[in-house]
Length: 229
Image 1 (cartoon, rainbow, N blue to C red):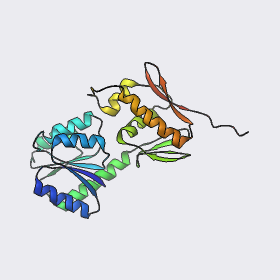
Image 2 (tube, rainbow, N blue to C red):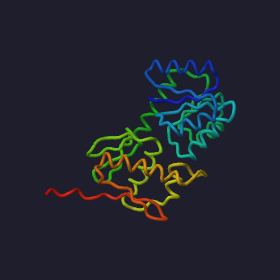
Image 3 (cartoon, rainbow, N blue to C red):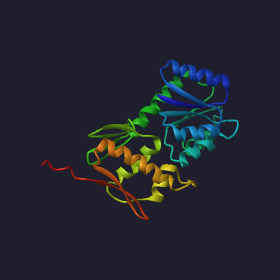
Image 4 (cartoon, rainbow, N blue to C red):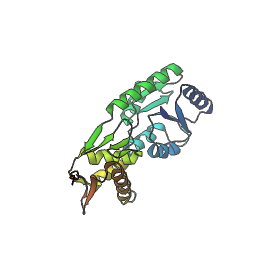
């Protein structure tokens, strides 16, 4: 698995990174909430291990910001806070599981594997004409080949494919891909539509198009196959 560990306690972080690496997992480490917030939005992880107590912002706040921004990666929270109320707070913020310190490393591995299985089972596959979005592998698959998708490209493709040929409003796409609290430049949507169009052309042989509906949004259009002469 590709994992993100968010932990500022150096000794614990070293032990967890070493143990997970020895189990064959790829692990990135962030020691602050701010760096973790950006990292999880830019890179597609199989799961995130998030400590509650961080030096700049608490883990629950980081988690809420991820969920608001559309990050759906499974999150396992680590904390010394073991009361029922605190566990409920973490779970309501969007945590998928909870592990109280100190913990057995074998239990950490087991919980991560369970999260990964659960998350993989929820990934959907959408199809439009000859092209499909493979959620398990985060790829566009078509008659001309396969191409990987970045997390935002995948989220955008999922929204467009899920709506078939219906028009999807710009506001809906911005909220679904960049989060309900997005306050950046809305033209970023057009940039990512351009990226996705390029990949669709390469895997679909120009049979699946993203058409702009002026002033409204975008929709998928499937062109009929060319007739043989």
